[in-house]
Image 1 (spheres, rainbow, N blue to C red):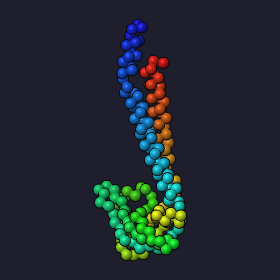
Image 2 (tube, rainbow, N blue to C red):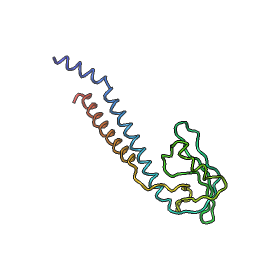
Image 3 (cartoon, rainbow, N blue to C red):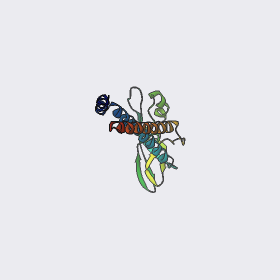
Image 4 (cartoon, helix red, strand yellow):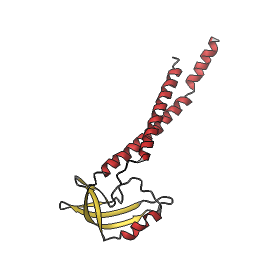
Length: 168
């Protein structure tokens, strides 16, 4: 009986699949947490777009994405006598939409026309043609919670498999 226990312990030490699964869960959880915190960082930056000025639109178009498209814009504006060039149509990081979604803007935003530019007065390099919505995204909360759960479960399972593999 003692010999079979040793054989089972030895085979368990060589089977690292549970440990790999827990590490994978931790990796996916970490990606979710980092991604949601980046979105939160962008939301904080977007809340700082408090000043407006008139600028000139240089270009506006919609990408050729098959399923989702992204608006592309180039515009110039002045702040305290210095000219800045902006490239963001919207400050919302989730701009992947259908081409039809952007059609009203394509018709309204023609090159050379004046546009309202929203910018951060303490950092005018951060600007946008569309005022971002100041809402807390449910996706940010969902991915933060889900990522934290995956990180915790992966760490606990990984640690328990590691301890079991050491024979303790």
